[in-house]
Image (tube, rainbow, N blue to C red; front, side):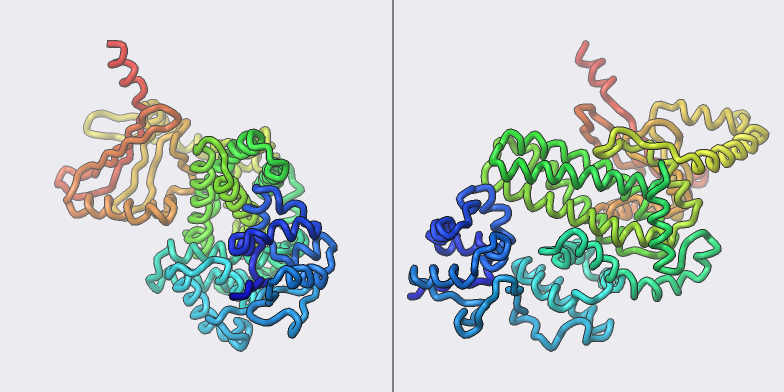
Amino acid sequence: MSKVLDLNKTVAELVKDYPEVKDIMADLGFKDITKPAALVTVGKIMTIPKGASIKDIELSKVIERFEAEGFEVVKGGSQSKAAPVAAHDSVETPSDNQGASSTADNKSKEGRAELLQSYVRRLSDGEDLESVRKDFVANFKDVDALEIANAEQALIKGGVPVAEVQKLCDVHSALFHGATKEERIAAAERQVNKEAAAMLERHKNMKKNGGVADRNAAKSKMADMAKVTGNPIRTFFLENEAIEKHIQLIREAVGSGDNDKISEEFRKMRGISAHYSKKGDLIYPILKTKYDVTGPSDVMWGVDDEIRDEIRTVAGMGSLNDELIGRISDVITRAEEMIYKENNILFPICVQFFSHEDWLNVYREIPNYDPCFISEYDKWEDGDKALEATEEAERAQVSHDEVVLPGGSMTLAQLEAVLDTIPMELTFVDENNINRFFNDGEKLFKRPKAAIGREVFSCHPPKVEAIVRQILDDFRNGLRDSVEVWHNMKGEPVLVRYIAVRDKKGNYVGTLECVQKMGFAKEHFEEE
């Protein structure tokens, strides 16, 4: 049986099929292939034609050498001599699942949505991610990102599980593979332009609320915001720059083969959790609940969690081997692609929709979260002035009101102080699942003030929403009165109690969440 060398396959795949490929390529000048770390990282995305182009090695000489070694060189099933391959050619071909005639730009929106759903099915059936990516690139490279997001939103509303649709987020990243940073940014901007106009048509009152309906105006406004010290957009951009620099440090460590350095730098990547938490608490819920832009919260939020969980898992697995180094490379690539999606899709959408009040709310809450790879948060002068004026008006109102209860009376200021003094994090959700109150103070579970008045589900990632709904439904239907959940947070036991709140007639009026650190009790009994 002849040995078939498919130029469409990655170097890692070819070495797995034919181990001698590694020695032949090293002899041809591809010296990095002898490094195990390079083979399991770059080798997973690099093909021979792409590598030849990068190394400035004539592809024809590479083909001749492999043929001399007894290989039949083909490109996706076509013999190389019948279909010569230039070093700069793209080597991707549509799979048998999609023909050249079914490109997405020739289809209606409904047809494109069906095409996306077919990708979900193929991924769910276990088809290789790279195979689906190739078809996605071929069929969707000129389709707008917001249209893709809307189609995904329709899939979710149509009953496709969120977890399945989230798989497409990694497929999207295929649009960025093999491009320079400038090309990636330009591609992302092209994707947003067309569909943004139709999306903004649904929100004609946006301009009077402080948003920007014109795409070019939004782009200009975002650039201006990014120059203002302390502005939330600038803060997110600075964090992304710092994350990107740290990813480069990890890549350099992988290239050097220094496992101790790889471990040291990768463990620091756990700090990305602070950046993702800010998005999850402060950005996604506003887009979803106030502007009905659900794609980011339903899809990107889940991917954030996957990246964060994988970093935490791999960082805690001890000594490195080739498999773990491969996983490190994969997850930092996903994190890097998320940076492009944020800077060129998510944040431009925010600028188009968010009012000035929205940005003030984001700014007010940011200090409650740890900085991510930056030393501290800058002050936003205009934001501080606006917030001080608002808070002064609130204080004046509270000081003159009084609450009368069967057990006595207090001013609102006194009641607020009492609730803030209770050594628990308290959150009250009413009978309609709306966040109504939480006490002030440092929290284990962040509660942005902007969450008040929203459905409680908007504060939770999609993967836990069903659990929260079930608990509240059980309380409402009288099936349970409380639920206790224990956590271990940074070595300290934490008790979270969800308690059904009922009036004197037994009617359900809401749920009280109580979060309490229990380390003091553990220490007390250990002393005894």
